[in-house]
Length: 239
Image 1: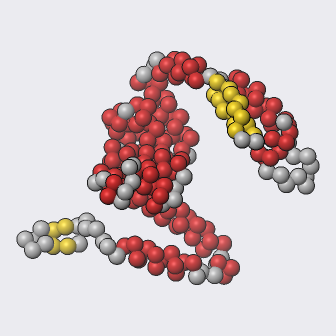
Image 2: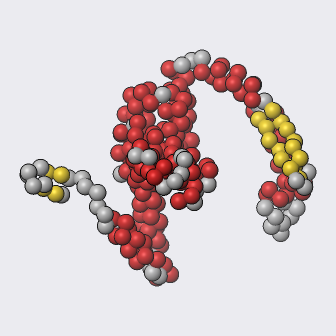
């Protein structure tokens, strides 16, 4: 809490010491002797860590959005925010997309933002809301936050995605037909020579994909109880 010279009350200021304090807390926690902790203490620790990580993800998403809005990445010599995230935070391409999707969704959905910052929903829930914005538009999702958020706070992301799909069907009954046509246009299966191997890529309909999966599952079963090969290795060697 801070009062300015003119008497203005400011409740939210940026605390430059927060990062140092956070580093100190984590460093202290690293010295815990977990062997001395009870099961109840370990349970509380794991839940507390997850809760804190989820809230920090929301804070990071806010920071990403604010930094990008000020062209901070350009000031650091990066052509895009995605490039900055890969270089400075060493994130993979998929992680970069998730951070930016979350950043955009939290700007557009204030109630989701508040729930994420309070740790009531997880980053995976935020990503589902971002998917909803992409499929339904920000206004539709924003207008239904009061219905979707209670569900997100009590269920896993898959159930939330199902609810969003049902909302889409109710608002736009023709969406499923358009999705089917779009999927038909993507059908493909290719095998391309790359160096000493082959790159396999494509998109199959659910029936064809299920048949291929059945074949792959049949040839990738463990040879015995002592077969320690990763499933990917078993799959390739089975073929």
